[in-house]
Length: 188
Ligand SMILES: [Zn+2]
Image 1: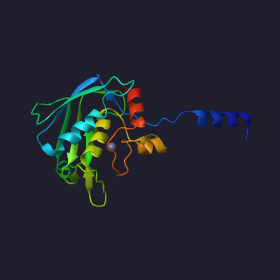
Image 2 (image 1 turned 180 degrees about the vertical axis):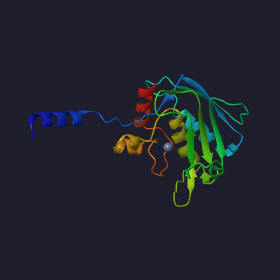
Image 3 (image 1 turned 60 degrees about the horizontal axis):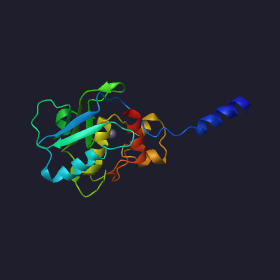
């Protein structure tokens, strides 16, 4: 191996892992989350808890306000709703977030939860049985709304990335991790 190649390898190894993977960021730093009446009252604690996982992150200026429950506001910038995905031709996944782009900024985000899965608030996650935990999915989708992507979309995931709520592996992950927070600090 030449000296140049050896040096380059050392530099690459010495770089901190870019644990998070970003898409577009919110244009501003304050947004109010509107929750439609499709979300059962029994899910409110889980949904609110998921939202607040993205607040108060060190070196992140983003603040999410609310949630406003049973919101009937027309075209809110940030909304959580529950729909039957097959009716809309959406992928067969528990949740999806529309609005963010691949880069730049976005001005609205819609988090949809799929009624074609069996939901619980007890932390049960089973892909085989289509069982999903409300808070685990909500915290992940709100992360998309905030402009974070799946870490493995930016390369092979390291252990910190795999532990993050933004990495999909069908395990109960209700709280943002250091990796998720680093992404937010970088974005805002
Ligand atoms: Zn996702």
